[in-house]
Image (tube, rainbow, N blue to C red):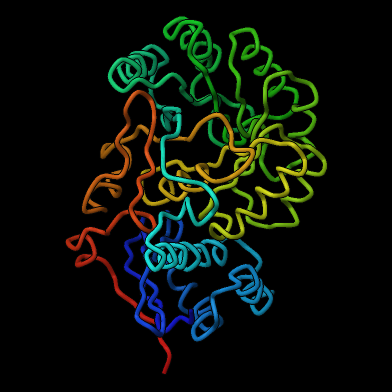
Amino acid sequence: MKLKSIETFTTPDVGFVRVTSEDGAQGWGQVSTYHSDITCQVLHRQVAPWMLGKDTTDLDDLLDLVTEREHKFPGSYLRRAMAGVDTAIWDMRGKVAGKPVAELLGGSAGTLRAYASSMKRDITPKDEAARLVALRDRDGFDAFKVRAGAEVGRDQDEWPGRTEDIIPTMRRAMGDDVALLIDANSCYSPKRAIEVGRILEANGFSHYEEPCPYWELEQTKEVTDALDIDVTGGEQDCDLPTWKRMIDMRAVDIVQPDILYLGGISRTLRVVKMAETAGLPVTPHCANLSMVTLFTMHLMRAIHGAGKYLEFSIEGADYYPWQVGLFTHDPYGIKDGKATVTNEPGWGVDIQPEWLAKSKYQCSGLK
């Protein structure tokens, strides 16, 4: 199928993409959240010209063409823009075939164990534990992730002693049968990361995310080599050679590509293949309830080497007001701690018309 038009509907926080083929088939995708309006500008100026009118059958080759033609712009915005077109093409393919994307990828509809992912640092350990216990009892989650340190914090905590407090507090509150994960968001030097890691190991945590500045792979590897706990990372990385280096040097124990930061499903599948060859599990990053978590659900229902659980953001309108009212129906119901991929074609979701009417519209098309 060849693309006739690429349309975007955006706010500063969320940008949806609709592609239309020359025979009238359509699909919905999304660029990455955060400054999505800028990303959509990049899409129309630097991605659409190379994809319109081109055969989308070999999507890997077409995406490589974009990166080659825009070789002077190897960074995140171009990849985030490419992801919008890639994910829309996968939806279009699913709708044409009458199958969910998971099935197109070699998997099937069904359920996924989810971990409840907290984004908050401005919350006391006691209050964090109380709200996560309530979620456990209401929704059946049996795995939870909290935050350590300050975001890119140069070894500083959100406030003194918070990390040393939240680690044992969570274990006491949850008991021994719940999996506990923690995310440092690039906070620590290797020495401090290892100190925190020892506390995590003593309290039975099983996942230690991005302990050092993510761009310092040697620092992360130092922590990985020193600890028994699984050290994880990769969410920010959008460059495939960086991914190859990270995996080849075994900088982490679990890889965490973000589908929308990386450039879409097709490019993420390349990272999945690298990880599979190296024997490393894949637990993708998907930290909000726009379409990125839906994309990740379909991917994880299909790939070999998928990690133990799906990341599932528990933050609502108080934290992410922009994720309210995006869809005509909620695709994110949790039952017994599990999310469900349905048999609906494509991504199985439609964008709320009222949201679209309030967004900024742009269209690139064949002349």
